Amino acid sequence: MKKLLSIVVPFFNEEEGIEAFHASLSAVMDGLPTVAFEVICVDDGSKDRTLQGLIGLRQRDARFVVVELSRNFGKEAALTAGIDAAKGDAVIPMDADLQDPPSLIAPMIEAWQSGFEVVLAKRVDRRSDSFLKRKTAELFYRVHNGLSTVKIPANVGDFRLMDRSVVDALRSLPEQQRFMKGLFAWVGYRTTTVEYARSERAAGQTKFSGWKLWNLALEGITGFSIAPLKIWTYLGGLGAVLSLLYALFIVIRTVVQGVDLPGYASLMVAIIFFGSVQLIGIGMLGEYIGRIYIESKRRPVYLVRKQYGGRSE
Ligand code: UDP
Ligand code: MG
Image (cartoon, rainbow, N blue to C red; front, side, top):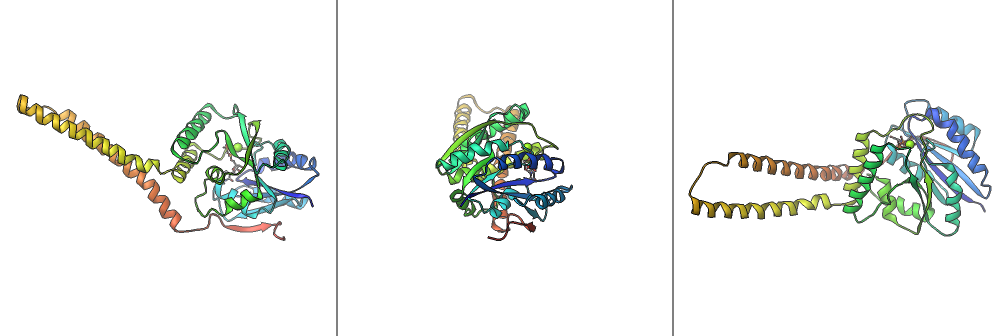
């Protein structure tokens, strides 16, 4: 029996790119006759003709399965939907814009067949990303890995191969807020890396604005670390000790020099500073409490309106 490989691809307003994606991916799949393929295309509530394009693909090429979500749930949820629908012995999530080169699938399969359960695709060359994106990404990995016990490998995206055992482990994680890079890292397993140079987007525009990326970064950090919550205990403790020392200093000075009035400016500074520190602390609490609130509703991660193909066992 041939092994089945599921390729999971989230699509959000990618109509211009579908044909190029199909051409490039099917060329790679045709060149690997020793494995069978299914391509789970998740339409993440696209507003353009992406869904029609994907259904057209499926009519021409039965390896393509289309999962239509009921609205835009975001990339993490779309990936989750695709991974849930995948039946392969291994799963490879990849982007629809060909920034994850399909030519890497062959070396990934090779590493998998030699016994690795996770094969990461590492971007050794990110020149196609803007300077700002590279720097903010670098900062994110540094902050995240400094705060969290689960380390996310730098410059590794969602593009990777995962054995069925890893996929099942991933699916057993119950959380609703799915920061995939973190969850992938959390499950562990025997891992190796293949390297590639990140290419430009084949067609269309990026779907991630700075604000969306900022929120994704917050999701990652709050989902995997409680250090930002705990830091306030220490900051508060430090502030208390310093203010006690200062009080002591004032008492001594009053005894030695007598009473004087100046000090309005330093008082204002202290009030504003500690007021802001408290606001930051409360905001930090809000980030977590908001997530507890959303998580406690136990809503599904995504809703499927319709699936085209791929259901029969
Ligand atoms: N995507 C998605 N839902 C969204 C945003 C993006 O499914 O709400 C998909 C998008 O279609 C693409 C992948 O996620 O296949 C990566 O998006 P993009 O290429 O815009 O991100 P970038 O490479 O710029 O980080
Ligand atoms: Mg992209």
